[in-house]
Image (cartoon, rainbow, N blue to C red):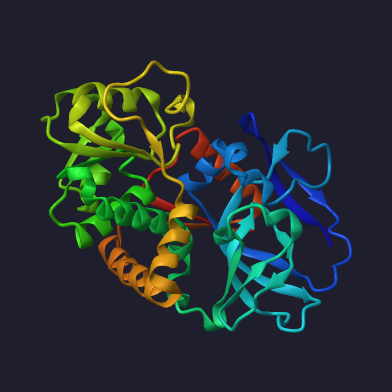
Length: 364
């Protein structure tokens, strides 16, 4: 058999090639996974944009061919065990977790329980354990066979939004009563807006987006007000915080220069606008607070350390089900067959061509 990967040039994300390789013999204690499905979202673009700084390129090394300077972008999705040399994991079992943009993967299960395990492969250990967890679907409380597409499309993004809201609420929203959310059409932003509606109803939600996406963002019903980026300089000035998912330095400059010291906290999360990704670069100092990067895995570890796995999972699951109800019908799920479709979708997303009203699932 062969394993295929979509390999991206790290310094030029529009350079993506398909590469096949022989995975070799399966190691003792390991299992071999066949990737069944994954979703390509703006989250994956962020993984590629900030990959070297946060180790995202290290999860799934590029294999085969001349792969110098190339990496494999992580995805969230479902896989099936096709070979096992682990006593507790059987061939045919289905899993959910972190997968390569490819057709297969070997992992080494550890800390095995009925509901999941950690991949103990040596090169993955320096990274956050959040990304090394695999759920065993037969006993996974989050698994709903009818909502597998939604879990891939929204799940990881929703959890980031949940953790941002939790962090802001713990800080009393830094004394502000409004939050400006850039890239408001992104699924992470929608997750944040939904959880804030549930848990922080006193905070006004301002969605900022590109002009073509304004109608979609308004139709979600998640935001109190929606504005195009060009309108930022005309917004009423109140105490506020900003959560920037776009990573667009020009947009962030507009927010800081318009609100200045009325901006109480500037939170950086993603980088969906890769053609203008210099929010943390060498730009001149901005008025107001220094932008602060939000790294969801660290906040996730702290959240579960505070509440414990059971209570933390309960809190997150309750907000997740409410979110699914809130966004029901907001997007159309499109399924595409073949790994080539993943390459095409990724390149379209890098170029900003994909409609936010669509959720793309790849079945390689």
